[in-house]
Amino acid sequence: MHRFGPRFVLAALAALALLGLATSSASAAGTASIKGTVSGSAVPSTVEVCAYREDHAGPISCANPSGSPAEYEVTGLSAGTYFVFFHSTGCSSTCQYVPQWYEGALRRADAKPIVLSEGGQATGIDAS
Image (cartoon, rainbow, N blue to C red):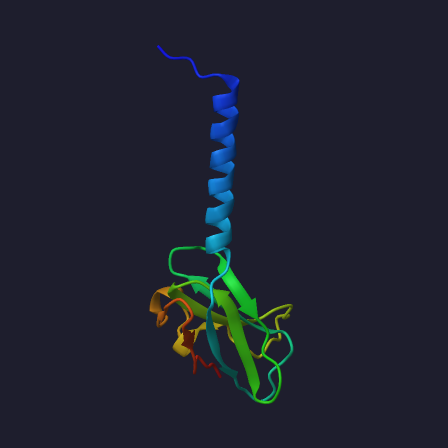
């Protein structure tokens, strides 16, 4: 049986740490984006648009529409398949806006997927 010395163990740990840093920084933020508008009688400042990656439970990135028409852009996405969710934040029981997935779906399972390549941009991802 071979015994590894302390220098070998330290060198191996350093190499693993560097490998982890290189991997996490390379996959941290992508260059793709999703862009569109949110329309309605009066789009409140509490509307939020979030992109959920197909293989993750939580949102990857969110944006707040602004301007007239209310435009948004979710940036920093990596290549992959996404589902977009539109909802109001901080809304009481009198909220006029129904949360929805892209193309008016009420459930993520019924939402239209958006496929992005690295550096790609999906436009016209609108809600009303």
